[in-house]
Image 1 (cartoon, rainbow, N blue to C red):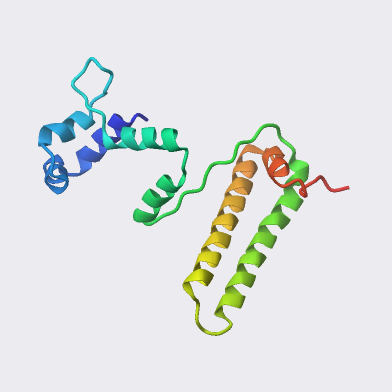
Image 2: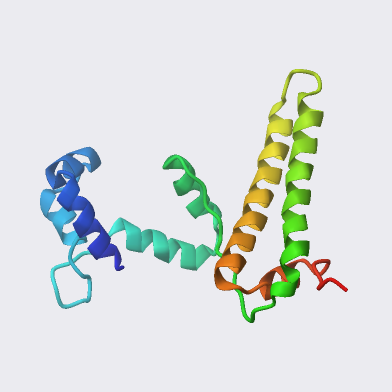
Length: 161
């Protein structure tokens, strides 16, 4: 889906006039965002296209993470997979269990004194993000029947002997 198509759908469910007022922009500008910006039409480069350009320019995923956090969610990068190797299913499952155990360990150590400092909270967050990433990679591999990507990222995940 193109950005202008998404914005067109969004504007069907919300008031373009209200969006214009909230952003301090003209109503015509809001409508131009919902049109293709192919250089020949009346469309305008919209904020979604600008964010995409910013991502390409910086290659910094923290931008997406920030947006997702503001929307009440989180961002997990989709793993890249190549060839099916279902032999890695059990070791990959063990990897998730170990990541979860590591997270619980960090939480237990941090909460031992009934007070969690900002540094401890940051450590918990980092372990949580790692667990989500490993789990998302596993789920994607399950959906595709392809565990090569997990094996490449985690060489310890080898076929059972």
